Image 1 (spheres, protein in one colour):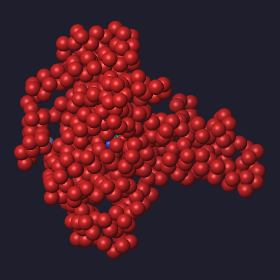
Image 2 (tube, protein in one colour; image 1 turned 120 degrees about the vertical axis):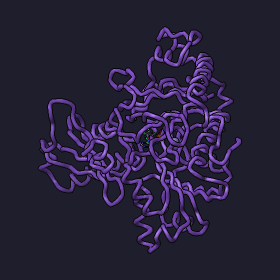
Image 3 (spheres, rainbow, N blue to C red; image 1 turned 180 degrees about the vertical axis):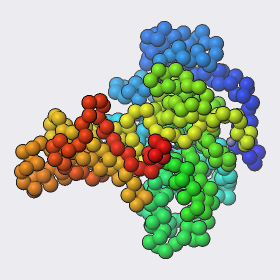
Image 4 (cartoon, protein in one colour; image 1 turned 135 degrees about the vertical axis):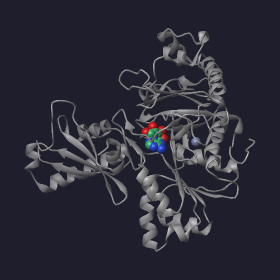
Amino acid sequence: MNADGTHWNPDMETLGREELEALQLERLKETLQRCARSPFYQAWFRDAGFEPGGFESLEDIRGLPCMEKDTLRGGDPTRFLTVPLDDVVRIHSSSGTTGQATVIFHTARDIEAWAELVARCMYMVGVRRSDVFQNMMGYGLFTGGLGFHYAAEKIGALVIPAGSGNSRRQIQLMRDFHTTVIHIIPSYALYLLEVFGELGVDPRGGTDLRIAFIGAEPHTEGLRRRVEEAYGVSAYNSYGLSEMCGPGVAFECPEQEGMHVWEDSFLMEVLDPLTLEPVEEGKEGELVFTSLNREGMPLLRYRTRDLASVYRGECPCGRVHRRISRIKGRSDDMFIVKGVNVFPMQVEKVLLGVLGVGSNYQIVLDTVGAMDEMRVLVEVAGELWHGEVRELNRLRRRIMEELRQEVLVTPLVELVEPGSLPAGEGKAVRVVDKREHARHARGD
Ligand code: AMP
Ligand code: ZN
């Protein structure tokens, strides 16, 4: 790429609006042609009475139904492929557990295009060859690790593939190798401050950090400012989802005022989650994306369930790629705890297995210290409740263990008296999110 000191990819980053939309249309047409090779899309188009050849404008995409996570689950995932399986070089999946995970196939070209996108993001806020980049995201199926890894190498930075966890070692690495840039889950960034405290090291004076990338989970502006102050860095919000590639879908520029969605690679719609009609510009809605530069497994009108709004007006940085607000929440009931996607239904499934039908429960999420805490309150039947304490403890431990296996996060489990949890007439409130970002999103 011919970086010009400000843009990693000047061709794409300095496009005017009209040129950008013309490119989108061209890429969308190519994508639809490619899709027409997959058995899944052939049926999808046929059922919708959609003629991929007769495509005139970007709005015509609305002739197709939206794809959902459920569309991707179950069945043989290769049915979405628009290339021979031999051309696939890697899979990734969403951070849910195996039961919930969706698999995404990438060709070599897809991996290259993805690294280019993330490099664009990193370069935009000042990462250069001379930087030392410590990637504190999980490596593996989760896209956060490898997504940034290849991008940083592309820029030519020195990469420390630290992975997640092992806090003292992280700090040691930062100091030994003079790390200047980190990529870190925001809640973990706060937690790590406590470990810095235990070691008697001030991240401001005791490290060379200057930039932090934070993302993968919702967080507030307040949390960002706290990270910036405590670490002495500029922190940038990074948004993505494995179904679109992973990180690199939307990213903050130096203005720190909204995340630019790279519209040369993603067609974005912002829809009312109930009617699926477009919301007025600036209003909150669900983000729906169509991949425009994916070879192996393009996705059309994929519902992210993430709620955000689009900024009006142009960004002072000059890039015309539209900006989105922080993610305000999700239109479904999935929540993210310690970076892992959890659905209340997974908890319900475990409880049904252990206790049988009818046990009321509630999931309470809170911030304890700087970390997420997940508590599951479970009503137990009268005879059990009045039975032996030892039995209850055994039951509690078993539920905890099975939940851990199902959701990959260890929750606290509290058994409560029958009838003590709220049971209204309408939908049960399964998740009570008391965490700071959730309170903020609700405006309380
Ligand atoms: P996964 O596909 O497992 O990586 O999870 C993607 C989901 O993580 C997104 O759909 C969002 O709900 C959430 N997410 C990722 N990045 C951010 C971010 N910067 N802010 C808020 N939520 C995010
Ligand atoms: Zn900008």
